[in-house]
Amino acid sequence: MINKNLLKNNLKIIQISDMHLFAEDESRIFAIDSNVHFSQVIEHIKSHELKDADAIILTGDLSQDETAASYNRIVGAFNGFNLPIYWIAGNHDNVQIMQDCFKDATFFQNTPLLACNYWHFIFINTKIPGSGSGYINEKELKFIAEEINKLKKTNKKIALIMHHHPMTINTPLMDQYGLENRDALWEKIADSPVQLIICGHVHGHYRFKHRNINIECSPATCFQIPKGANDLQIEQAIGYKIHYFKANTYQSVPIIWKIA
Image (tube, rainbow, N blue to C red; front, side):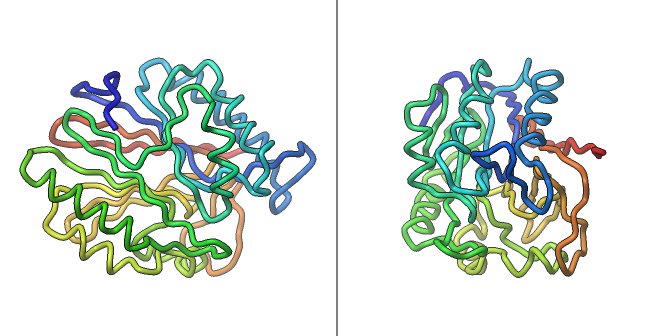
């Protein structure tokens, strides 16, 4: 998919992840009001980052209760943003309900590929029904390989966007729910134009480099999980991530703040 509004040399993309929203205002996740935290993040983006942004990516676990009402909260929150919004599912999401809620929403885009001037973004489904872990099926792996082969003949770079992290982050609580067939992915993207992998899931800002490919994990809007945690711990902080893309490089900036 080509979005003519994104055919520009420099791009600013806002990543929002792991909202874990509910239909009911009274609902909580581990005593956290994720609906309110999401609203606070949206207001922060409106005040500080929206003016010069080009697109938004939602990287999974948008809902906690898998209800249409929780997804409609998202549609309402982005009313008036006037930006393309690209989304993928996380392990807590109901893909069919997401599609039903987003298909008629202005600016919401459900596409496996976004082609821009210097960067191509491939959106990958890693959801396994009924599991907290992730998996990329053979059809998706084949699609990734085909896009890589097309772009090898150009000077364009590729960023993969997925929910689950494709390598260990040294936080055991989350590493047990990573991408199960990560080796298959790394085999497909070896010696390729893939320069960056963007993911959510881990509830924290992480930055790694593996096999010469950069990995950026986003903070969550609902709460963070401390680095190195072996069991569930809650850090009262919320946030998102900004990605700046230029012809030959990119920069990612985490935005995180503590709350009472």
